[in-house]
Image 1 (spheres, rainbow, N blue to C red):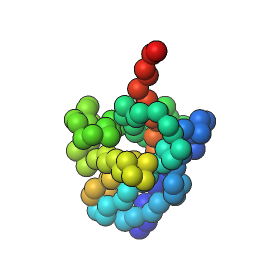
Image 2 (image 1 turned 90 degrees about the vertical axis):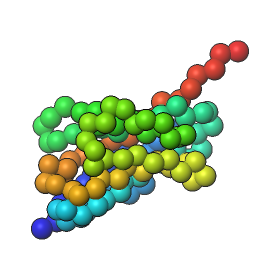
Image 3 (image 1 turned 120 degrees about the vertical axis):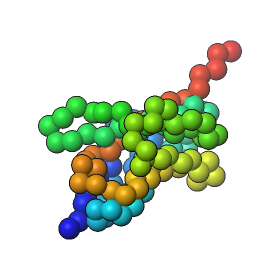
Length: 115
């Protein structure tokens, strides 16, 4: 049986999905990616969210560009990784289960410097 993972579109052009639909089997691994190519400010973090049909968005995990703790760790099978050279961030879901089938969103938070 195939499990479908969708990466939702964002309203802003700051960060966007690279591959909007992924599929895998239960027990497999899947990586979904968002790009922030062309974003010129410093990235503080990326937040990952999941949404089931007819449900509200639910926060999953933070990803930080310089490592750092991905707090809160709500699901240990989920891990985020930055690739600053490609200006991309990945969310890896290990040992996929049926309830991972959903729409996922990434949101970028930049650092603000005042002059």
